[in-house]
Every structure is written in C-alpha cells, then in structure tokens.
Image (spheres, rainbow, N blue to C red):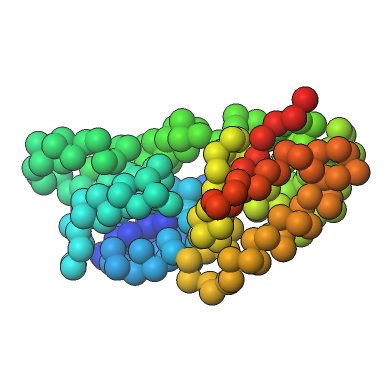
Length: 228
Ligand code: CA
C-alpha cells in the first residue's frame, strides 16, 4: 500500500514538480492549492504526511499546521513545511514544535525524498508493515489478514476498521472517531453503521475465539485489546 502525501502549494510550477517527484517515487499524491482546500481533502481521506508551503493565499501554512495539531484526527499527522530561502527562519523556529521538518526552496528532489522517507519511517507504522496481536496479523502492503496463519476474507471497510483499532491497542474510540478514520468526514454515514461492521468483524473472529479482542466500551464505542 503506497503512502499518501498531501501537497499544499499555490504555485503551480512548484506543485507540479513536487507531484512529479513524489509519484515517480511511488507515493500516492493528493494536491491542494490552498489550505482551505487541503482541509477538505483531509476530511475526505487522511494522508500519511502533509507537505505544505508556508506562504499561501488565505490561511498560510503555519496556521494550517496549527489547526491540524489542534484537531484530534490530525494531531499526529507528520507535517513538512516548505519555505523560501530568506523567509525568517526564527519565525519558523518559534513554531518548531508544530511541524516535523522543513525544506527550503529551491529543493533538491533527492533530499526531499530522503527527508520524507525518514519522517514516514519515524512517524510510526510498524517497521515491516505488519500489525500483529493475539494471532491476528494485518499485512499493510497486501491488505491480507491472517489469523493463526490462516488467510481470511474480509471487506475493505472491515479491514480498515480493524487496522485503526489494532494500531491503537487499548484505546477506546468513539463511533464518530471511527467514522472519521474509516469512512472520512465528508461521507455521511450513520453511527450505527460502525456497530454493523463491528458485529461482522466479531463474527469473523469468533471461530478463532478472538471476538473478545473487540470490546464494547459502554457509552463510548469500541477498543481492541489483546487476549492471550
Ligand atoms: Ca506559496
């Protein structure tokens, strides 16, 4: 599964160069000309990393980064800021906590790719692209699931739901948080849809005695917990 990067840059030439560079390196790329459009795209589908130009018309890159940090859904999203040479580095320094890295324009594509790769590696995700707990193994490259070594069939929605839960073991998610992560914010889905898919997931896990890994958290939603 390729990593997705949201590129937010108002200058078409630079944006095209960024997109070209990233696509050639195997990333999935989403483009936005403004911070406002970027927020819509994020609501639609959460990228793995956002590359944002500092100087944008309307909301600038720093305000966008601040806003993303305040939002529970995007608080941990890796953010790389693009700055033009000569823009006050001290101003950026004062905001260093809000961004993960910055790159000065004009940039070297090779350096850009190396920095993004390092950041994506650091920013989490399992090293070998496997998430494993209680005998359940999600292969994030192939979208396959095995339980105790047996491959099982599962819909893309249930896969995504299980992935979100297993990435955050023991964390209780509200239904609305699961909807945001699995379906995206721009899709209208009723909260009980989550219950329907959780029920299906439990059915899939039950023959292996693993349905208890998916716990209902009363008054909140659901969590994944390892069972031995
Ligand atoms: Ca700009």
